[in-house]
Image (tube, rainbow, N blue to C red; front, top):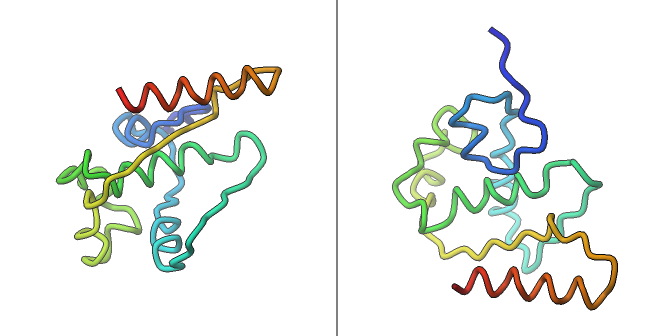
Length: 121
């Protein structure tokens, strides 16, 4: 049976739990981790999965999801014990600006501040 393509879904968990069509991009975690860069800038055109990839990375690394690595079973990142031990071991702050659609610099700054305040709460 064909699987549904979850267009516009930015939640890694939702895609996996609902068995939506997904191309395994968990090698991104390994590549990013092993690069050891001080700063990572991810630029892609709209609708290229930036937010979904960041959500996947949060789901993998965040202590909030410690012990919930089963969602990665069967994926590339889960093949190595080294990475299975890494799952859920870091505090992660995940901010997405995907929903900021303001037309002025002031409005954009205000919305960013609101997002940060919501994360603090």
